Length: 134
Image 1 (tube, rainbow, N blue to C red):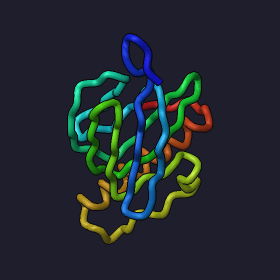
Image 2 (image 1 turned 90 degrees about the vertical axis):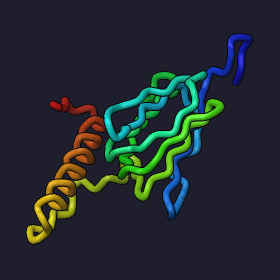
Image 3 (image 1 turned 180 degrees about the horizontal axis):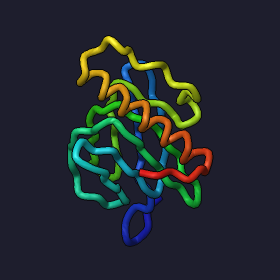
Image 4 (image 1 turned 60 degrees about the horizontal axis):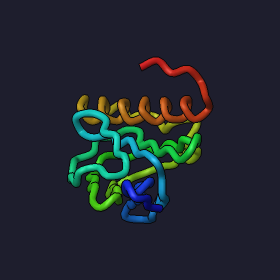
């Protein structure tokens, strides 16, 4: 949808090697960039950036939808946000009981796995409307 002042929405597309997780027109997208969160509104200057594991949020009207993305890349161009990620889950697809982290993994891998579990659980709590401490 466009007005005399420009488009009112951005198209957000989230793609993994297995499927398209999201393809929708939204008012706002929050991306978990490698070095912090980036908000995208219609008319955003084009960019390409590296994603970190985290929460991708979309807002359309009063509705907020949450997704977990496991890194990857994002491109913003011509009011289209394209996310290429090895793994993406809708908040409702995140398991209530996460898989245990392998105790024999090297310390760096174990720490990264624990971080991803914490991010996913925070997304689930947000989705349920629970208070979340950062």
